[in-house]
Amino acid sequence: VAPGSRSLSLLADADIGDSLAASYPMYVVTSKTLLSLNTFPTHEEALEKNMVRLYSISDSMVIFWSHQWLALEHPDPEGVQLKCLQGVISKLASEHEARQLFAGSKHTVASSNISQQLG
Image (tube, rainbow, N blue to C red; front, side, top):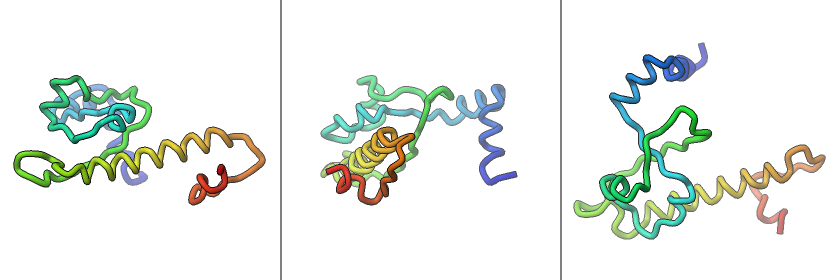
């Protein structure tokens, strides 16, 4: 059994997956919403503004990210963690778009310098 495959099969089992989801709900935010943020909201603020929703097994791709609060009154008062996360998501999105663009092409593009090669 490959590492992690048991947990994936458990999630696929409706009874166990539903039980895990009820015990440990995971909230998700779309990359579009995340990239539009100017400040990192608290979970309560994000819920109140409908910025997050409960994860669904039908979600096509989820990137898990965890952070620590950098101040008692705000999770990211200077926006350091938010800017970092937005940079990572932007880079992943642009590399994904480049792979889609070149899918089936006879040319190969090294992901390390896609921007340079595309001009």
